[in-house]
Length: 103
Image 1 (cartoon, rainbow, N blue to C red):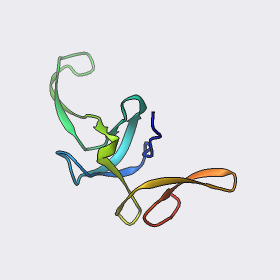
Image 2 (image 1 turned 45 degrees about the vertical axis):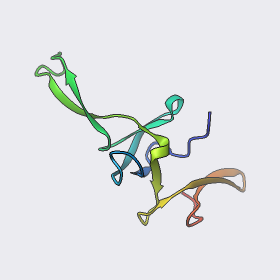
Image 3 (image 1 turned 90 degrees about the vertical axis):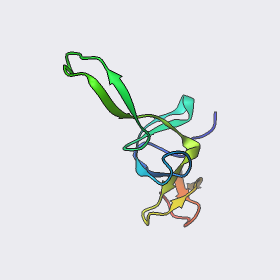
Image 4 (image 1 turned 135 degrees about the vertical axis):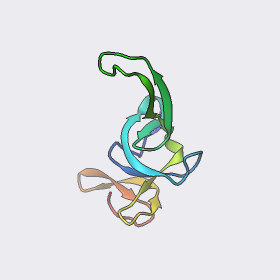
């Protein structure tokens, strides 16, 4: 299994697929499937039966996982970058390969 360089809480942009160009914050990372759930991206319609929590039921929009390879991390300036790791002192830190700044 490869090291995933995108973590929950990161701001990302979709670089491939139907949702190309959309941006959002990573809510959850599914390590075993190499996918991530991004807020407001890759919305799908789900038919839901009425229940105690949702007595009306009906069609609900929710985020579906998107593959990590289709995501790119955004810097504070709003540009996409690749992520690398390096050791500074006793800590291992993530850094932007484009600007060489610590993330």
